[in-house]
Image (cartoon, rainbow, N blue to C red; front, side, top):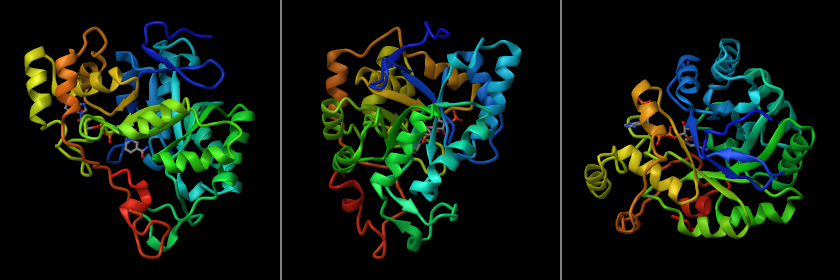
Length: 318
Ligand code: NDP
């Protein structure tokens, strides 16, 4: 096994494997090129979070191939690559072809982690996002998860998991799972701390991953609520750290994997620099007291679909 000895990691529940504590996000406005990923590998990133929906698999695959040929890494095993099954393919018979397409885009034999992107399905063939409301369907958990388990058994995904699942949806999934999900990737940051979900996942040995740890600030779908939060700003100023670093460090100290996206060379390095300092008890207490609100929007609420309200989608976790 190739070494990631310099990388901070958390244990996964599947087969004694480990996951780097920080990963680079790859969701961005198109077009996405290989350049930021190559630079990220040079900076020391070893964990990348892609998805068929983001159209970042192909450029990431090109960057991995180039990093290997340039000797930036010695072997593919030094990397931890996650991709996700989009809802259009969240149908029993479409899961295997979807992961095969993902692997072909990435030019890899396997992904380290394959996630069900969202807890619903979309009519096969309808790839546009946001989807037409008549195309949003209830997901057949048993059919889809059995196919995910098959991907794992075939060695195409070393671990499998989910994303955007609530406690209730995890409970439903666990009823039909032979292999429990190793990960649940969700919105988690100082402004949406997810205490209930964290307790539940801990009790089921499911590791949480935090997406949008900075609230996706600066992107067309993001919020400045997190980076503009006074409490975090004051802590950052007092410690001589950036607001982003305080947010990322906070996630790490909660025992949660953090996925952050930056395609800017300086911010990429800044975001990795969170491991040799810590937040004090008093600072953690101040962050714990920040008023909470969910910010990530999934466009699937409608009278005709499976989720009539935000409450339905998030099972009251709002
Ligand atoms: P983030 O919270 O990571 O924020 C990204 C934004 O913050 C970018 O605009 C980036 O700009 C900026 N930024 C990054 N670092 C800094 C810094 N140090 N200082 C100031 N600004 C900074 O949002 P994302 O929504 O991108 O979440 C991260 C990843 O999580 C995604 O890329 C994706 O891989 C995953 N994700 C998964 C979802 C799911 O449903 N499973 C949903 C949403 C995201 P710049 O690039 O210019 O630095």
